[in-house]
Image (tube, rainbow, N blue to C red; front, side, top):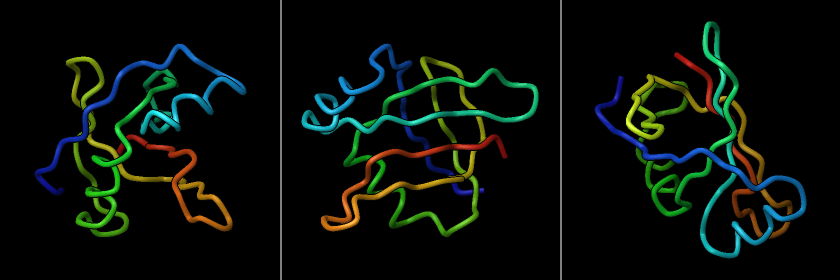
Length: 94
């Protein structure tokens, strides 16, 4: 497991309004796993890009959601087909 931590907050904006979050540099994401409630979260786009480049594919790292830390792996990454910007991320409990 990489000794890296990504900070996230619970997300209260859904649907088409998520577009405004992306303009502000915030990525919508989901966190789920066995024994854990599925949670809609938001993360800083620059922080995620750095982790995406440094943590090897399939390796776990820490996700801090409002003070609670979970070991996670990047499960699904959705990107824009032309600009290749990140649109949505799914994290799964490791």
